[in-house]
Image (cartoon, rainbow, N blue to C red; front, side):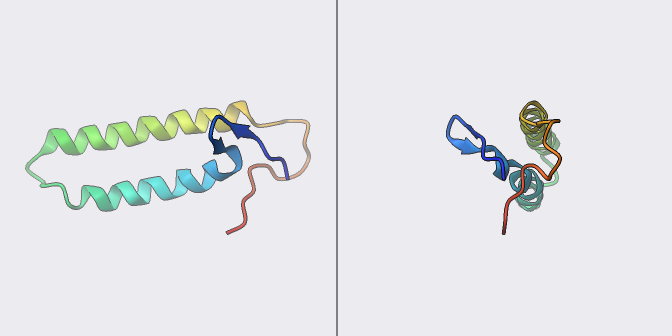
Length: 75
């Protein structure tokens, strides 16, 4: 298993974070009033942009020369 550390977080846990963050943000959006359209849209946009940046980290740290699974974490 390839362990890559970038600043203070472990890159191998980013896949789990990318799966869990939309679920958490969806439950958070359930408690925002439906009449506040701009807040709903801004939260959704910010979470989506943040997930895009995280996916760029995964793309940068992907090693094509490794023939096995990468970014594996055991739950």
